[in-house]
Amino acid sequence: MSDFKNIFPYVAPKVVVSNDMCDQNGHMNVAYYLQAFDENSRDLFEKIGFDKDYLQMGYSCFAVEDSLRYVNEFLEGDEIRSMFRIHDFNDKLIHIVGVLLDKDYKLSAISETLVVHVNMQHRKASHMPESLLKKVTEVHQHHTKHPVDDLDIRLKIRK
Image (cartoon, rainbow, N blue to C red):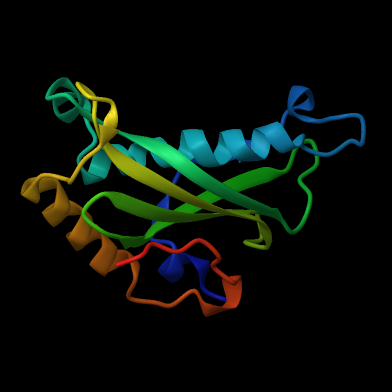
């Protein structure tokens, strides 16, 4: 896959692998891969509408399934570039696909996460309000202009 910048339009700030992120094998510990995906995708969720005002209205989203694949290792001092896209959605679920790349844009890890829209009063899945669904639709259209055929996307949302 040659053009990650087009395929994954949302780019998070770079992170450098520190010594405390490494395990006994001298590479980044698996927990920090998940942390990089989780922390670096939060701003994307705010941009699509899961901001403080929306949360105060009594809604949020919960991760309900994750798939994480390790392709190449990160070593201490390596730069991590996190990139994401809304791959699919329906009126209750959003499928986020992310990649971690090294400084040369070589693939190191792939993440897929399904998040469910939640009514916090009942702590149950609920339909997204039309205003949020509109934002998700707009971002999805922008994010999916280029296919990700080479990544073997595994999680699916039933329509």
